[in-house]
Image (cartoon, rainbow, N blue to C red; front, side):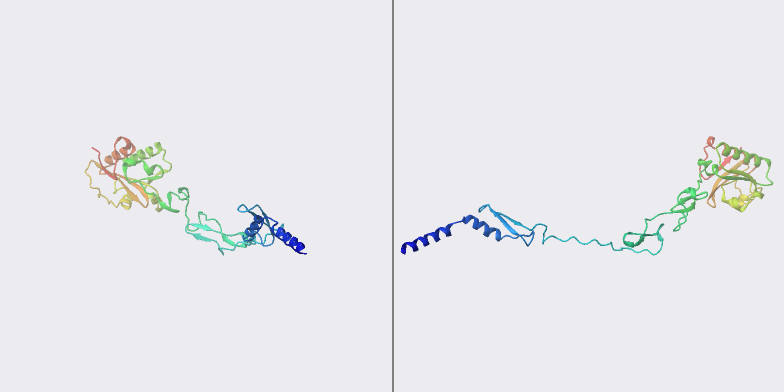
Length: 280
C-alpha cells in the first residue's frame, strides 16, 4: 500500500512538470496586451521569452473597432442668390449649383452693365476709354507735335469777308493735312459753322475782325492782337476737349506767311503753345 501511494505521488510531480514554462510565460505576456484590431477573436501565440510572438486573430469579415465611413451628404448651400447684380464694375447672374442651390456665376465685365460705358477706345466716338468711362482725350498743346490731332479730324475756318490771302492760307494748311494722310477735314466760312462743329478740332485763320469764330474760341476781339505790323501769331488752345489752332497776322500777308510755316512745320522748329512769327 505504501508503495502504491509513493508511485501516485511521483506521477503527480511528473505531470505537473510537463509543458514548457516558456510557453506559459508567453501566454501570460500576450494576454496582458491590448488587441485594438477587434474585440471578438483569439490569440495565436508562439516563441519563447523574450521572443514571444503575439497575434490576435479576428473572425473573417469582422472588425468591431473599424471606424465607420460617414454617410455621404449633399453639400449645404453656402450662399443664396435671388437675382443678378453688380459687384463694382462686374456683374453676376444666379445659376444652379450642386445640391439645388442658387449661387452667383463667375464675375464678368460687359459694356452696358453695371455702369460700364466702354471696354476700349473703339467704344468711344472720338474719345478714350478710361476706367470703363468715355472721356475726352488729352489734346496736344505744343506746336512741335504738328499736325498732331488735326491729322485725325479738323475743320479749317476763314471769315466770310476775309481777303483772298486767307483762303490761300486755308488751302496751304489743308494741303499739308492731305499730304500727311489726314483722315477727316473740311474747309468752312465762319458763317457756316454750326454748334456741332465745335466738337471737332478747329484751325482758325485770319484776323478776328474778319473771322468771328476767333473771338468765340480764343476770346480775342477785333484789333485785339498785340502784334506789330509784320508779325503773326500761332496759338494752340483746348476747345471743349478738342484742339484749336489760331493762325492770325496783323496783316493778311503776315497771316499767309504764318500759315505757310504751319504747312511746312518741319522746316521752322515750331514749339510751345504760342509763337509770334516775324513775317517781314
